[in-house]
Amino acid sequence: MNKHPVHESHPEIVKRLKRAEGHLRSVVEMIESGRPCIDVAQQLHAVEKAVGQAKKALIQDHLDHCLEDVVGPLPRNQRASIDEFRKITKYL
Image (cartoon, rainbow, N blue to C red; front, side):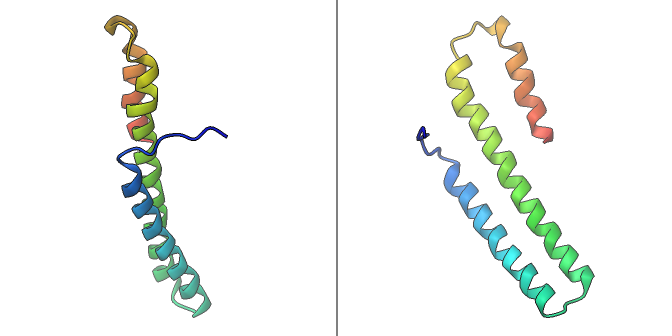
């Protein structure tokens, strides 16, 4: 297995995921204690949002660091597709 470098954004991504992990534990406890479905759904939404934001940050970080190492030397006129790809991933 290849070991990839830890990027500057990784600690923040880990922090987001740990926060989501705590929210998810709360959801399980809420269900087990019979809390109203609306409360559970609201908390699940927060978990989903936190994980989605972590995923988006990780993908953007990968594009900014790992992919850039590969395409960086390309002439500007050959980078259009890569630049467009980077822009569209913001909508993930």
